[in-house]
Length: 371
Ligand code: U2F
Image 1: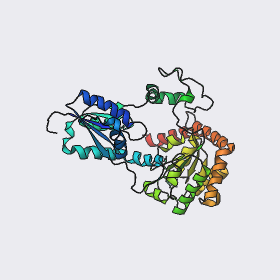
Image 2 (image 1 turned 90 degrees about the vertical axis):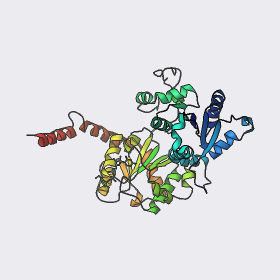
Image 3 (image 1 turned 90 degrees about the horizontal axis):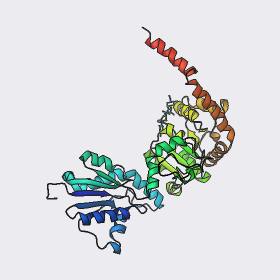
Image 4 (image 1 turned 45 degrees about the horizontal axis):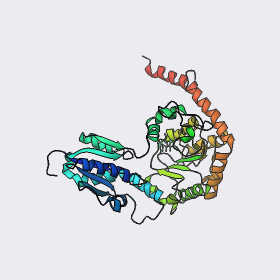
């Protein structure tokens, strides 16, 4: 790095699927065309071995250097490759940044440009920090890219979920006039089929209940999204993450209101914190309640016995069978969804122009604001 003029191009590959090789092929052509530049190719060691170690690549220009980035997978991990990818995704931002900083150290100013697989979204922040361009490299076709580019428009247009509308064409997106809703990338789950699990900000079920809940979910086969703090993941049964890697996803925090508003979510497993109950009602998602303390037991009673928009977990604590039974009941008995639909309309009305909440708010504002 003797030259003062920036002459390094940092390349960030996504190491799964056929992502790294097409990027490498592009970089190889650029490297031949621009022999005074150095191309630093960052990927995991497995990916770099397959890209740089294959015989067809024995003619690698000397101005491409490969660097291995930590893949984030624990050393003794032997599970499914999808679970491996989740470890990778969780740590990739930090690992790529560390990898690049450890190569460049105080010489970050030698970087003149980033070329990143489009999945490595954080490349644009790194480029912005250095005030250099970032080229995003999309490895698939332009039509699928267009569906990402117009995601908001597509979501707004099919906001009620694709059910029954699969054959409609996406003619509001340029170039996709013959593409149908059924051709779009999966969000993956059918309407009202997914369990969302969260116990709010304060509550954690005891370890044996966490394990029973996990076993019940696994045995039911119900797809799930679970908001669970990282330090609690180790309390889940051995191999649970790998075995459910195709049906379940665990994250430490979710945008809960948006999650509940997604048409695929069919049941909310909750501690019955008041905010969660309100958010579930306004999204029209029936609940499985496992209250712990304070107002949660009363909230649970309202949900299950008064409003009939959910059920208390069988025997009051999570067991494998109780969890399975409750999931079956809430997901497949329509009455819960019908009742919460009606309550949702009332809630909407209450915050409308003439609604009781609006009137109450106006009264409050008069009291607070009066001179
Ligand atoms: C206490 O309840 P919590 O704060 O534990 O639970 P909630 O009232 O249900 O509020 C949780 C909020 O956190 C959000 C969720 C709610 O707005 O949308 N959230 C999120 O955005 N993402 C996540 O992954 C998880 C949660 C108390 F324990 C209860 O008994 C009371 O009823 C409550 C209100 O006083 O406060």
